[in-house]
Length: 430
Image 1 (cartoon, rainbow, N blue to C red):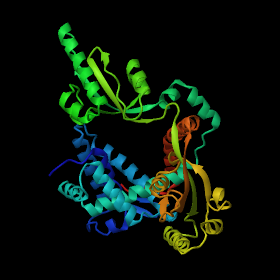
Image 2: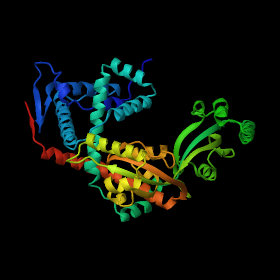
Image 3: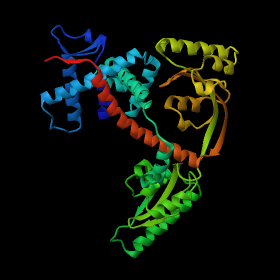
Image 4: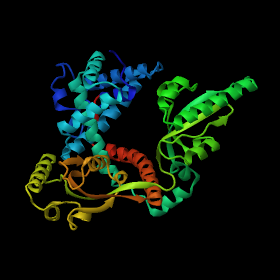
């Protein structure tokens, strides 16, 4: 089996080429291309990155390549910024453990629709060592964690900004309901006779009755639909309510999850829609969890490895019968929850960072999670209880706040990168 790596994946696996281990492999005639604080960039690293970028552009069908001098200057600037951020990560004690890295590689393979073994083989066919790619991904993850720590802390979103956004046309669109839909289409061409149109209408009614009687929507879509997504079971993916014709949006909005509409007429023919999932919109019932946690942070006097060792010891003490609440008060470095025995009170998963959210959702009630790492440090959590609440207004506000934070993050990142570049010692060799 042979496949081409997705360009985004190639970009990720082209990642960072600065490391002592790689420098040890440089050929004897290699030379220093730049000095960046306490690191060096070798000429061979620049050439290797240029080759990778040329391959990426060729993969995308872009033959209008810039001159070597222009590309070399761009690549050098990129490598300088990467080196600065890697050194910041090293000074902060940021490390990516092998388990997290292996999980990321597995996810990259799954994103390309292949097994890890097939992914490894594909990399090697494209001339990329799997171990080399794995280390490049590790360094990309370190850079992302540095950015989360250093840039996110510079961003503030006020309540007034959230209100203004929700009252804007864009805000109302962004926070409106999303529907994941499937559709059966019975086409009626413009040139169709009245008899042909009536025949399709009758067939649509028949299919609707079959669906109401329990027929499988996917099977009917594959065998009877004339839509372009028929072979995917009619799956349309996610659609905003505003993207649907008004009659379709109204019909879908009244459905329960798993429900189907009566046949709907459009200029293209007859349509039957199935609501697979819904998110956002009105009357949003969400799961809330009563959770407590212990947070151990790496610091100037505690490395990532020492933080991991401490949280593991606390996990073992809890499993041996010691009080979670007492240990949280004594050791947790989350000032907002430590005095309350680690309690975060009631939270929604979407309000938490990805690592916390995934662990929260996978931990049974009253159970203690194994230690896990997020951008804030190492955590242990316990899920105390679960409930469903109407969070329509709160969720819309949180969704708006997240959108504004992401927008500000992208803007602030560029400013921060310019700042760290100006503050670093950089000497480009001719």
